[in-house]
Image 1 (tube, rainbow, N blue to C red):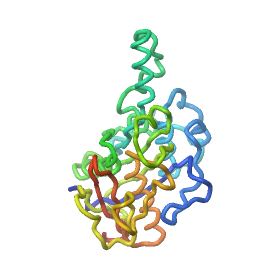
Image 2 (cartoon, rainbow, N blue to C red; image 1 turned 135 degrees about the vertical axis):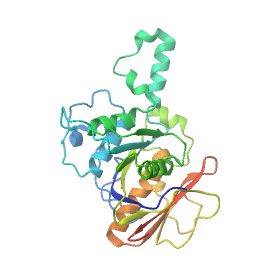
Image 3 (cartoon, rainbow, N blue to C red; image 1 turned 90 degrees about the vertical axis):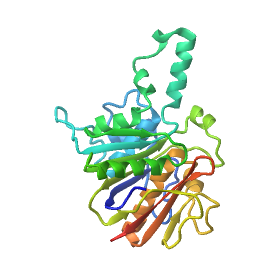
Length: 289
């Protein structure tokens, strides 16, 4: 159980496949560039050989921070901020590179692996790239725990704040939609490229409750319930609009809840997971939560 004393202070959803004007639980995330066009938002420098999931994550963080288009990377020669941590939820983020590298090594040996591709084979590449890009020197972690990964990442972010390891935690969920990723995921909803980001800090109006394991029906009492289909009759299931989401879904749900509550007030219950991987849940409230 983790939570309490933590607020969501920023959020974004970067959904290139979402039709223009589409709304999620009443909130319009706005247009989003596909990963191959990330330079239109991030600027061109530094994107060479970056994988789709990494580009999507960078775009989501850029938007959550409210940075202008093409603002680029951090100012050179400035020390990284040790008080900002990064936690990324992704299960499929670099699977295409891992498969390509493994095939190249098996077929032609290690010399066949491009020096540009090799760093992308790291399981922590998305989180470390986000930290380097924006100049953050706090802990950076990657969560690959299946369907509950999004809220597992949020729980780790809360722990970092509670332990005094960071004053701000950037939590990101990102999944690509390449053929390798699609082949690995057996899901009813199609896999589409997406990323979402929430910023966690101690102070703020949107108060985050504990992240807990859910073994029964979702608790009632919230004004908005974001959950997978079949868990509750009144649940809003985002996968019909955005695709499977997979490891990124919990972060996306929290970002959507934050955007809705910032406009309307009230409370939201978030549930992510599946029967095989288990379910996680948390509550977000505007005010004293």
